Length: 277
Ligand SMILES: Cc1cc2nc3c(=O)[nH]c(=O)nc-3n(C[C@H](O)[C@H](O)[C@H](O)COP(=O)(O)OP(=O)(O)OC[C@H]3O[C@@H](n4cnc5c(N)ncnc54)[C@H](O)[C@@H]3O)c2cc1C
Image (cartoon, rainbow, N blue to C red; front, side, top):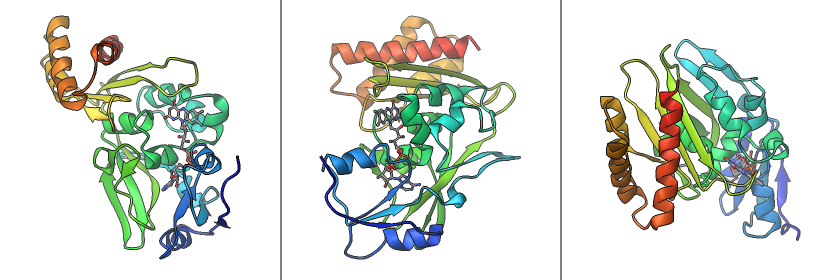
């Protein structure tokens, strides 16, 4: 199938792209790697009047290490992160996550900005960035703003992006030397979206533990009961299972027995990964 007709614009700056995306009376969309948007247009599950091609905007490409952490441009591809072209302040977590996204062909084109903007509940980056306490930098008609990724992603394919706004990139706070992380992902078929994803991150020695579950509900969710048990450092497996059950009851209240076991096993695997570091 082919996409319905639309106009195409390749702006020369973020300001021009933002103005085009905010045009009154038009349905517009930015395109970055095109890995999700193009199939949606071709299958005619999405219809637009104007496609704004941001894929060549250098302003969205920069990756910078700063004293406070790491800034990753929205156009950074999964492949660039997998290949170590982004400084590794996080003990290999970003590379491991990137390398497990779909197939290399998708990773060559798909971008971190496109992934978070799309807010697919089963995507890897929203949960990972939430667990790392990252913020998203956004430019739009009323200037630039910054928001925690955990606030930015509001639900299934739903974010706080307003008309004319573009994701510039992400700011990841620098972790301490005693950073520990665990990551577990269950996929039914190689290259497919996950059925369950869990992250466990301690950014430093006295920093709070963050446990995030994705691909379980409309958006990635923090699991505070489980995190508190890990923080105490004395949790038995049974106590952890009970804490996970309480978190699942809040975030996935309709989970059947299979889903409860699946998400419990994923979180426990991530915890084992975290404990092994
Ligand atoms: C077969 C297949 C399997 C996949 N499996 C996984 C997986 O396992 N895990 C995973 O995380 N992802 C997966 N993906 C998604 C993929 O990795 C990309 O992250 C995703 O397609 C979005 O990135 P993109 O750059 O291609 O965005 P595009 O397709 O270009 O755009 C997606 C959406 O984001 C918007 N957008 C893009 N960039 C910006 C920006 N800078 N500012 C504002 N809005 C923007 C677009 O308007 C559009 O609505 C898979 C995709 C495919 C095709």
